[in-house]
Image (cartoon, rainbow, N blue to C red; front, side):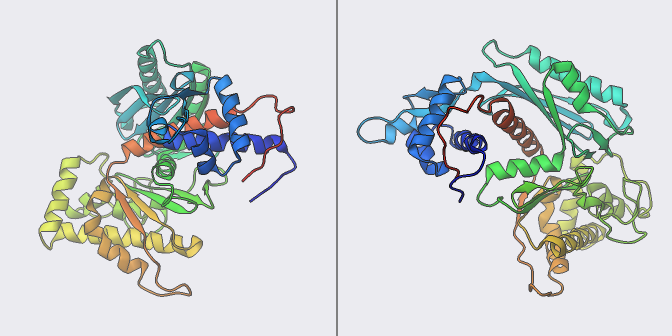
Length: 414
């Protein structure tokens, strides 16, 4: 706990973010509730909420749960003003682009999904497809929607640490696609571009903050294998890129061919294309399938559940590869809660035993790792929610930060 710091303006901005964050999690709160949620003093909460109401960022409502459950004089419920801003999110995945507009409360305004042949798409093709879809949803905005103020993209691939460029992706032949610069120039707003797994991790922090708090990893098990990692309450980034490429950690030297062009990656054993390659009897150095039909993958999984054979052995190999990666990860950072996300999470029953055996195969100085794992078979809603929260938090901390605070009283940071 910090009573006072050298820069009061920073304290006030942090207090303001705490108030807005509480309203994001609970939608309707009285001032008394906000005090309880944030640990700020009643006078601090009163001053902040008064300023936010004056700026139109939040509003009062005498309807709803807060007034109904209180005794005596009804408490006034506070809520975010949905009409003060609009944000756009874009998910770019294998042969898929999904755009959604959200209001400031995080409610969907409109959305569009298109199948885009990304494997043959050039940089111009991708920029055109994303721009056309954003134009379409913006044209369908209702008259009472707020002005577009931020765009957040989640992409399947490696992004730069500045969150502006897709450096490389297995879903398209082109690299160094400057989505951030191009979209910012087109729409006149700031744009963030992040790895889709980082967006999944951001979403989990808001969905279940008690479980996904300071340290955890979200691992996508799909056509590719990726990871979003939080350490000490902050997202992990590489020095120059998004980093945390769990799927491209080495599992078997000179082993199976991966989509990235290297051999022996975890992904080359644990992705859907790797499992299908093994069950079909192809050599492990055969070029990976570009796209895997969900029905085909589910059929292979059902055959693996039915009995011994090539299918069950393929899932065993996948579990061993993922377990090997987790064991290496835990050696670096200690065991953390793990969220498995995507189609691979739906077949966790087929990989769990081998995965746990690899991780717990030897006891070190810390004993047998305690594997805390949860599964989320559909990654797409999480990617979009992570993008949404990235944009909304940007508004809270950058565009809606308090202006001239020199005359405001000093508050305390909790």
